[in-house]
Length: 407
Image (cartoon, rainbow, N blue to C red):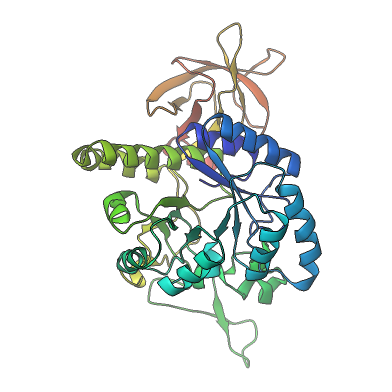
C-alpha cells in the first residue's frame, strides 16, 4: 500500500497491508505528497518491523547530473534507517544505491519499463531481486516472464489505482505545459484536463476535441482494479500486489487495504469463499475514491471502454471523517476531523478486522467541552458521543449520498 504521511502508513498496516511504500523528502515521483524526513523514515521502519511488516522508500526520479551528489548523501543517510527496500527506476541511481546504501535491497520501479524476460534477467545480474513490472503487460506475458527468470526473482505488479496515459508514467505533457517535470516528481496531470481546438484565424472560438461523440477528456483513463481476478494474478506467478495512491487519504488506504487483504486471505483459505464474498469486495472498493474501474492491460490492450470522456473528477460513496484516536473517561471518541458532519448524522465505523457498525453521532464536543451542531473545521480535535461501539484505530466514514452539498 502507498502512504503519503505517517498517519496513513499506520492505517494501511492496521487495515491489512504487509508492506507500505513511501517517499522521502527528495528524489521520489510524488513531490507534492507530505513525504518523510530521515527521522520519520527511521521511526516508521521501526514501527513496521515491530508489527512484522515491511517499509520501502521510493527514489524513482530520472536523475540529472545535478541530482547525483545529493542522491549520494541521501542514500548514505537511508542506509542507516532500517528500511526494507529502495524503489528505483534510473540505472545510474541503481549504481549509487549499490555503493552508498549497500545494506538495502533494490526494487526496480515500474518507471523502468521492464516488459520482457531478458530485461528481468539483466536486472537480476545487477543484483536486483524484485522488479515492479511495466503496467503495459498482460497476464499471459507475465506468466511467460515468470517461466523464464530465476525462481527467486520476485515480480511485483500494480493491481489497483490510477492509470497513466503514457508508457509506465514517462510523460512530457506536464513539463511542456507548466515546466513541472513528471519524471522528477512534479506531475500536474494534464492528461486529466479538458481540451479544445482553437483555429488560428478564429481566435477566442474554442471547438471541442472529441475522441468519440461523448466528450473531450481525451487522455482520461479509468482506474485499475483487479480485486476480482486474484486467482489469475497468482496463476501468472506474481509475488507482490501493489496499489497506487501516495496522494490519497486514510479512508482510501483503509478501504482498499482491507478489501484486498480479505480477498487474498479468503482465496487462500477457500476459493469458493472468495467467489461468494465478491459482492462485498466490489461494494467496498466502490466506497474508495475512484474514476470507475478497468483491468488495464492484463487481459489485452485497453480500448475506448477504458476511458472516461465526460469528466475527470473522482467518484466516491463515502466521506472520510477521521480515525478514532482515543476514548476519554466519558466514553467519547477523540478524532482529528477531516470532513464536515453533523450531530444526528448516521455514520459507519470501520474496524480493521472487517466489521462495519452503523452509529448515530449523538454529540460533537470541542476539546474544551463545548457542544457543537456540526464539525466544519478541517483538522479540528473533537470528541464524539456515538451510539455504537468504537475503538482506537477504527475509521469513521459517512455515506456521500447523505450530503452531496458538502463535497
